[in-house]
Image (cartoon, rainbow over all chains, first blue to last red; front, top):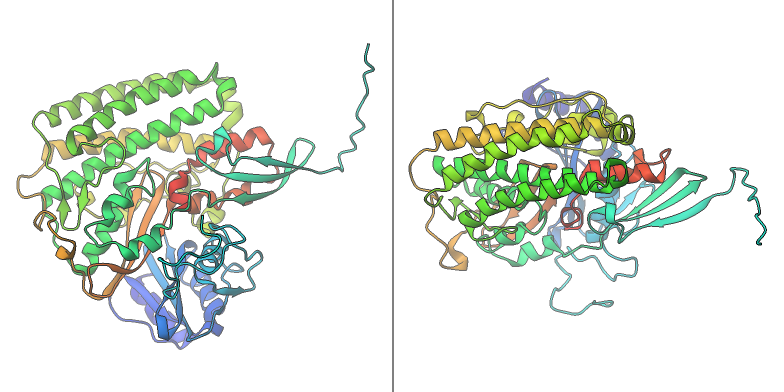
Length: 150
Length: 382
């Protein structure tokens, strides 16, 4: 398996547009297809290694989740990106496919408030349970004290 | 005379035990809520976040010239690795050149850092298993003694012993002072010789073998699924090292071996790290032998906050830190500050494997497993 073959397979089987060039294979996935594409990437392209997942807050354009998975034998990196859309905070969980997504998605929930559907244990991980708000959102002002500010 | 009563234990009763957050074997602040059936752990809830300092939010408010010295505070035992990941991400987006000499110096400090970090791991791990190793403090004190010598090298290079701010976008901030190369060679020779002394204390030590062999086995499939990296991944039979598989900062110029073990237990992780010690020393010697002349940075020294502007774009830069893949995911919007920065802490992913391997072992084994995972909580909680 090579990166080019992975690109071809991905666009052929999933029908999605795969970005050209660059060492990583980047694919923009609609949220409803995220779990099935992740399973395909793991089984067929051999990306068994879950590097990390996170989110980006595009302000008016809403949140986007990003997950990096790798095929360590053939040095292929696949980036799964999913735009949630303005105002939407729901996203399917990758935990059924990658167990490593468990803590990563808990962190993303903690910091961005993304509700991962199908996550077995979605609760805060770094902040305390009584924390108000999700700090990495751009709307979370750093200079206003939020309770419990301590 | 008090009456001796026998406790009827049928083995069905469960006990919830709290371990930490101030437990010495946690090497920081980590709380494990263990559910026990007799001696055996049947469930664990790992609680982290005690050391959270909102690094990712902070990075959005600090310029590219300011943050590298803060980056060192994520993994404070291996500060050089996280600094390098951050500046590499910025260099990747901005396509900034890094002079050859700076690349070699980056390799040298990162390998020295690996030796220093592994020394701290070996010392504290043996201290954790103390009773079994004739007190355990001997190995700890010897390791700290040798680590001090590497910190001396950093001190004469940067002026700081723990948190450096050595890297900057486009190169490094300091060139090596007079006499540093000789001092470094002497230190490497000394540590290489001392490594054999540690091994003779641990090799064939019946207690050490019992505490580590077959304990905390991570299969290669579980390791990849969770994203376990570095020495833990290699001890589980996956031959993957970023320095070899995705070379950065001129690592392709150096010869070194990537150790792999297949057992995946605590002892395998120990063996992998003991080889890494020697390979790092080998790389440092090659750097000192082949250090090219030239500038140490492609950009002038820092004078103002707006000095480094990174064009719109994003990049994921990763380095092989002592604990594994330290990654920095950076989204830039064309100003002098990142729009979004994400740390992929090696310790975070390594620690995430604990809930999968702890059920089934005893409380004493948790101590051995925690030590062999070698987490640094600055990097877990960020």
